Image (cartoon, rainbow, N blue to C red; front, side):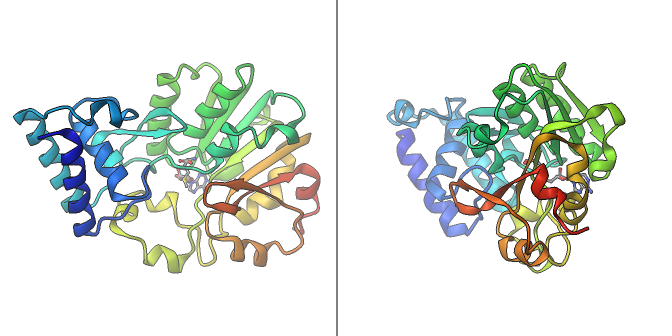
Length: 293
Ligand SMILES: C[S@@+](CC[C@H](N)C(=O)[O-])C[C@H]1O[C@@H](n2cnc3c(N)ncnc32)[C@H](O)[C@@H]1O
């Protein structure tokens, strides 16, 4: 059978099984293409080149086994393959950390932050680094920069360690473990740029999450009743860690209403990303200084 036919069959089975997407793909066809190409050891970004390939019996067995696991275990495919892609870069991933998919990566790739920075940032903080993907992307975007990547989870930091090494930036990015900004050491800052994709899912939304999202560490997602538990102290203290012209770029996902309610007077710049222009915001040090404490 031709590979493209098997992709279509797998997509139909994923749809029929009602699996949830959102960990690298948004629909059954893209997820099936990833699954089939990965099981066959073919390049993931060139479906057209493999579409007419006739599958061997061994390849069919490998596809079936991965598809069965995806449907029955309800884990993100990235946990089953051990690899996720963000902005064209591969990252090691497993259940110790959330699957990389931050919208902040889009703002880096599209240079949306650059105009606010004025010059290349010398010091970048990736707060809540998880798998380390944003720290890696920033270090590769600004080759002269030095980074700090911090997280509360030692498990997540173990994954980040692998990814910093994989992308050759471990000598420029130091890892710190601890709660929010308290993880930092005196010489770490001040930063020209703080990137942060924190846990921000409100409690009601946490309770409605599909199984694939519940397979991820709850620490990475749960943001308390209104999703702002991590963000409140960050707003109060981030300015202390920024240079005079420094900025904070923060992802809040679908929590715009809760964010506005919590910080009604904040002068935020909303950055456009693929799902809309209300999920990632930028705050200057000056704007943060005016946040009521
Ligand atoms: C949404 S994930 C983001 C991970 C990664 N930056 C990304 O974009 O894929 C949030 C991360 O925040 C970490 N975290 C949760 N509470 C924290 C806290 N109080 N201090 C520091 N990190 C925390 C979690 O362990 C998780 O890795």
